[in-house]
Image (cartoon, rainbow, N blue to C red; front, side, top):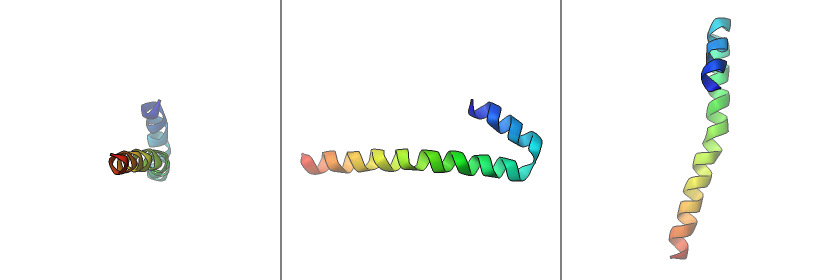
Length: 46
């Protein structure tokens, strides 16, 4: 799905590509942060 969105953005220009990239980055950043937080909590409990 992401590749299809990127292909569509490429046809629209560099600003569209950068906007889509930023959107994906913003959506994935909290997931990584949450995983690190869970890891810290588990280490603290042990």
